[in-house]
Length: 271
Ligand SMILES: N[C@@H](CCC[C@H](N)C(=O)O)C(=O)O
Image (cartoon, rainbow, N blue to C red):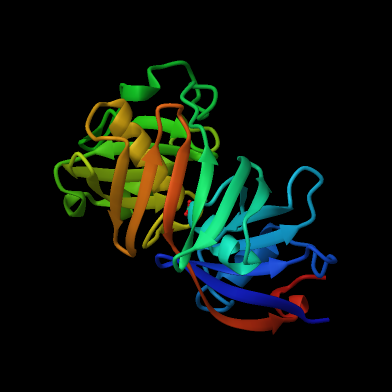
């Protein structure tokens, strides 16, 4: 049995998309997702995305990180799926309902409202999430926020000076984050522009992270560092994030498709 997939991209974040809205083609689990995502022996991607029917929205999007773990949200994949679907849609995710509108070579995504409670991130114990009283090798006092998935954002003078490749995994797996965390380092260039690098939970250093961009802007606005509409420059390109007075986050940016193919799950160890 062969399973069709589409390779999609959002600013260098890349996805293997499997559409199971009409019927289930494959049972996805941690081992199969990790095997498909492997860049040496699999198709290669940052996240495997599964589309399924939904009872509460137009369809459901499931997200598996490159390590195979299933997670709640993926901003860049949301734009890619808007493009794949081809028209405006409401999408059910583990992190909440998203509204996507394709256009201008990408999409706008209404990402919902951020959550700031320590139990919502989640953290292991109560503390001020807007300035966590912790540090890791000079990276200190992150802003923790859940934008559908958990993020810790550190504001630093220069993002390229941070050893994110070694500090990222340490912070991601610190017991203070019982479900792990995505780690962002951000620098504020002006009231409407920041630069950002992200170590993604379960995927490592990626060229862009859409939810990371949302988290960084929410953190910057809440700390009074920027206005509410901010261009976020990531290694893979730019996103525009707005965080309105009502607390709603909207992400705008590009997405693309590169190729379609098929695979036999048995070649990746699936029964
Ligand atoms: N690439 C993403 C985020 C994917 C999930 C994340 N690694 C997590 O574990 O929460 C994005 O564009 O938001």
